[in-house]
Image (cartoon, rainbow, N blue to C red):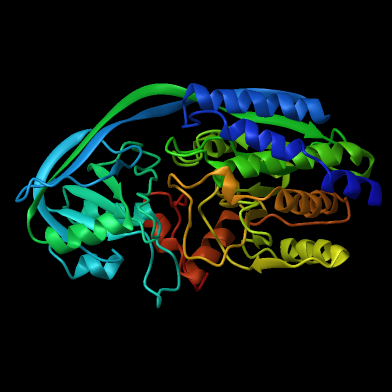
Amino acid sequence: MADWIRKTFRSDTGWNHLETLVDIENRMAGSDGEREGAERTCENLAEVGARNAHLEAFDLQGWLRGTSSLIHQGSGESFDCITLPRSPSEAVIAEFVDLGYGVEEDFADANIKGKVVMVASNAPPYYDRFPHRTEKYYHAVENGAVGFIFQNHVEGCLPPTGSVGRPSTPIGDIPALGVSKEVGTQLARVAQGEDIELLVNAEIYDGTSQNVHAEIGPETDMAVLITSHVDAHDISEGAADNGAGTAMLVEIANALAERESDLETRVEFIAFGAEEGGLCGSEYHDSVTDTEDIKVIVNCDGVVGGRTLQFFTHTFDELESAVERVAGRFDHPVRIIHGEGWRGDQWPLVRWGVPGYFVSGYRDTEGRGWGHTYADTLDKLESRNLREQAILLTELAVDLARSDVDIEHRTPEEVAASFEQEGRAEGIKHVGEWPYEFEYSPFT
């Protein structure tokens, strides 16, 4: 056991792949850069010893960022902004309203019909969950807003990006921009109740993306999935989100190639495409996969950004126990969140009852931190974290692949009930991503 640990702790394989990814100019979903990132990931998985490394293409609603502007009509002052992906191309002039956090009750207490609304990217301190950007966007749409502005809550003159749109209608209903905390604060001071012009130019096209596949271990029908996503928003290097997760896949594959005889179940690596556009790659994979053949999915998204790994277990006790076993062997701290989560590439499988983790690096910050901004760059990450976390995740993969580790799948009804009981179903339903046709009742 000590030999593979020593090699992993001294390995540059994952970090070198991370540098390869961040040096690609643009890994936006559907772009040439995203495909280059997928191809290089496929090559490196094969190089470290994974077999059957290949790309699997799928159709994609493409979107290309163009120009945008935000102008106060009274003074003619222009404010720095960026377009939110999958915003429609449109220009509007309307009254500006700052709605603060932009949670549901804020919309209920305001008249925003025919207005441009701004909301913050965080949640009130008393809130028991973190409303997603798309929830706030569709509250704005459904209450009659004609434009949407998403204000970062993180200081540093960093406008946030992030997609709008629904799976059934990938392009959003109203134009949407991101502004920094500082710009939003100024807007609220000088433009509240006055007209502003919001302009979005974007190219919408039919495109393709691709998922990367490779595997290690015995050729069993059942598989343990280790996943990440290759794509990143075009405004940054996408180092933490999610170059680091894909680099982690390569490093785990490198370590497991040394331990293939320890695996009792096939381990399949998948680096999904187009996650940032709405989990498009993992949605496609779900559509062509028999979920009964998936033992568990371990989705790495945002790892390395903090030294301690945190695991959302989707309330599976067996998944919590596996992490505790592995962490105990190394006497290494981990953070376990025994709760549900629907954002991340594990969701298209977890929703049907597949046991799944969402794994990230723990940071004592609110929300994404540097993520989805210009500041998601390599200098925020440490190679030490990648190596340490790769050791833990490699051991976790071997543990989950053991034939005596039995993790029972759930029914969709059980998953729905868990989300309802946690109070997390409302947000999923609101953005049109609740996949169940049946009605949940606490008495059934």
